[in-house]
Image 1 (cartoon, rainbow, N blue to C red):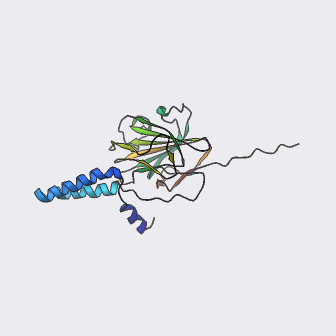
Image 2 (image 1 turned 45 degrees about the vertical axis):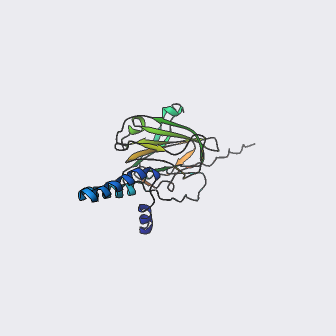
Length: 232
């Protein structure tokens, strides 16, 4: 990312979830100007932080078919088999899970990893452990989204609250058709996003790699292998 793109990302318009915080910060700054100047500075700093945190930059999908893009910005903290959230009723069979940790400095808007139909959305209350903790996937507050692909395969995206995050916002509904990279919601102030991939996918990321939501290719559907010819 060059300097111009970095500036555009930082100055991107905020997500609608940030409006109440931004307006509140401006109100505090105005009151501080009238009553107590240090309060005005606090209001201004809070407003600037919210403008940065809730930034919602546009993203460009990679021109490749049959790929999964990152559902969030952040750092890959694990790539391993795991059982999907129980509330989705998908059974105990493990699926490849890519977990992405979002710090307060990352863009927190979540995106659809691939085009598909929203089959189910299930909210699960829980704890607020550090989102980088392995237990966060099972113990923390989360919102699980099941996507059905035209191929009949299923993909799971899980929005997970973190140590500071106390609010998960989901902007989609069951039965809605999504396109890859489409915004699906936001998690406030530090979080984690897990992606459970269907069988027959090839992961293309590793632990420690940074993701750009809606742009980084995270995995691809493996090509169907034709049966070997029978010798006569």
